[in-house]
Amino acid sequence: MKVGRVFASLSLIALLGAAGGCATLDPVAAMRESSESSVRECSEWYRALDAAIDSAGVRDAQSTRIRGFPHMRVDRFSAALRDSARTKDSTLHALAERMVDLDIAGRRHEIANLSRQQLAAAWGGSEEPDARTALAKARECARRMRDFDLDSPGATKAMLERAKVPDDYATANRVLGLYALTRIPFAAGVREHERQTHAAFERELDASAKGNVVRFSPRSRPRIDRDQVRAVLERATENPLRIPNPVDEDLDLLFALYAPSFEIETAGDFDRPGSLRWIWKHLPEVDSADPAVYRHVAYTRYKGINLLQLVYTIWFSERPAESSNDLLAGALDGVVFRVTLAPDGAPLVYDTMHPCGCYHMFFPTPRAVPLPAPPGENEWALIPQKLRALNATDRLVVRIASGTHYVNRVYRDQDDSLARYELRPYDELRSLRQMRGGTRNIFGRGGIIAGTERPERFLFWPMGIENAGAMRQWGRHATAFVGRRHFDDADLLERRFLLDLR
Image (tube, rainbow, N blue to C red; front, side, top):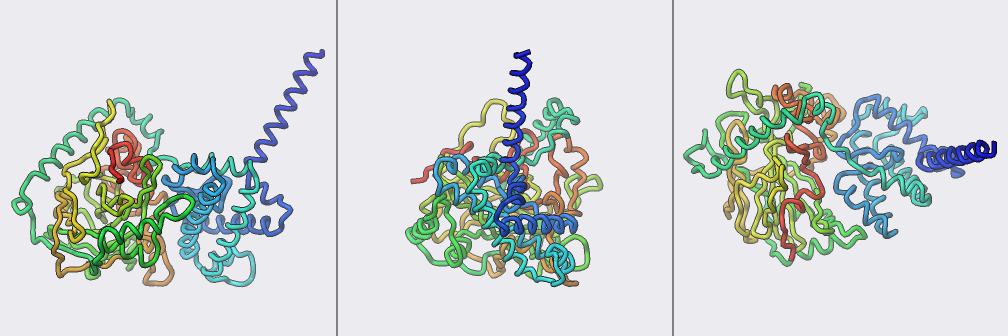
């Protein structure tokens, strides 16, 4: 009898403890029950705003929402900072602020893409606020809610535990597709693609070129030496997280300095790059009369040091079919080119892919020594070419093949062309203006551009990549069919290269 009472008491204590733990790990409920009216009101505002966003289908997928923290989002780089945030208050507060900023960045476009009626419904009043007013309210509320979280050890612990980005592979597809077996022929296909890529880089460019070769260069080219670049990066890194975060003129200078020229074999309209426009179709169109390259900032980590990455994306109207059964053809295509900078401003590694996450290749400089692939790793690092050190006056040229838009050479040249492109913010694409009024995100559910589906998706689904071959938003790029790898993995370079950061 006594044993039964003791067992019952222990069970009750365990249940109460579990209930207490659950309450601690439910920040939204804690906010709604807060004694601070402003926190309660902000929690309700975010609930209404999220309902309007989801109802309208305008959710932005670039960063991942954190369960229980509607005012924060996380990307893979931020998730990699969690361990350092556990040991120092200033770092914790800075990481929380960064995740709030990621949410505000997403909210800016989600709010812009709502109609006035949808926004008014979220506002909960008779007035119809404009997007600027709504964003200002979201920003103010996010700061209040962040401070509320940081005052609660339980909420802070939950925030750090949940600040993760799920990978972009569907495990269920791999199970149903018998991945353990089907990966074998896919791995053989990867080896064959790598062999063909190496062969393409060994051929003479002029011998294999199709059509006319047109080089597009950026409109401006700053004159700046390496010491000045180092100073820019040192200034930009003066923050608790030690993230190189250049802004305004400094950021413009870096993007202009490292912007490549794109040398394109042009055999048809499908090889003419341009800006993206909403015209009358449901699919954005490429305006080749207005050549543009879209830029944005990214980061990686190497042995605890945060490194700045500059990302450039060029778009084409399509990848044309080479035959009636071409599995890779479809609407929209492009090339993403990324440069990773050392703390002194020197390029360490360049890498490229297509906006589908396909054809990921690395181009290391002498300050990046490739590491061997682990045993059994099938898609580790395709390195078709190594680059010599660049001088401050050199412009990198990216050669792109006709039709397939494969990158088949990267080299340096001091000459720019008469054909120029304009650098534009990648964020424009998250709320792109429509001809009939309003704005719309070119990336839809899950960060995929609807209408860019490729027939290959019916064959490649056992590898776990949803809608393989379709064009994707930044942060949604799985880049390996065999294994798991993302273009924005925070340890992507650390695992594959020995970097000289001196």
